[in-house]
Length: 312
Image 1 (cartoon, rainbow, N blue to C red):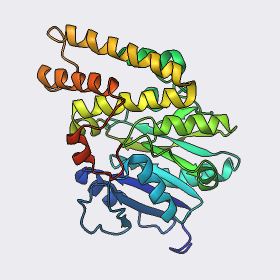
Image 2 (image 1 turned 180 degrees about the horizontal axis):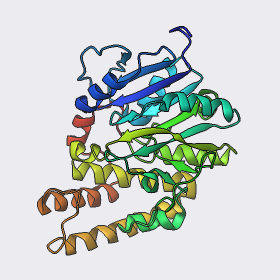
Image 3 (image 1 turned 90 degrees about the vertical axis):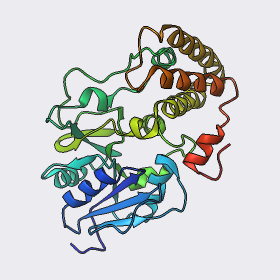
């Protein structure tokens, strides 16, 4: 195997997560079969140590745009999309390559995510595609969409795996024109891709022998509660419009406003878990109201912070 012919190319999207990225690069095997590409969306990285290669798009492309940018530079026939806080356990990369050979008809291979203490994250990671009903319930802050109680066996088909660690066949990714970059900067781009894969008759196969230790929970504290809410629900409604039609998206906008109003009324009694203070929670919820009633025009502070040139 030569460095010019890797078997697997990992694309890591970096945005203000230097500590986790440093640990990932340090743990990456020095094997030319496994390419490691880091797309620097925050433009805050210096030179990276080998074997990582830093890619600089020049602006924040978001998660979807960053994956597409990295995939164009990748040299392997299989692309591993990887969060900076997900690190392969011993033998995980080899298991992914073996699975890609065992299931040549698969559009992708889904590894197993485990937490810091070794517990399985399958209920969060491995989910069915959301139904219209579960999406509408989410706009009312009702969590009703989870994966199986028992982890599936090797070779099982997974409808909607989290993109924290996910292998996709380059040929299929190209056929679908990659991730939809309109889901900026993150959330629902992986759900949208999973829906398009299923609509095209493609399958994603589970390989529990490839384990990745995933910290999780780093994005919301870095992003902030208000921006997280605004971006998440903007993209949820965009997904609804794309896959279920404008009528349902319009209805969901009103159920979202009802859900936010209820949260605001009950805020003195219950602070949302992801918000540091009730004041932060109230400010974030009011931002969602402003977004939902203004066709999600980007606030000036968010425009400056995320710095993508074509924000509408």
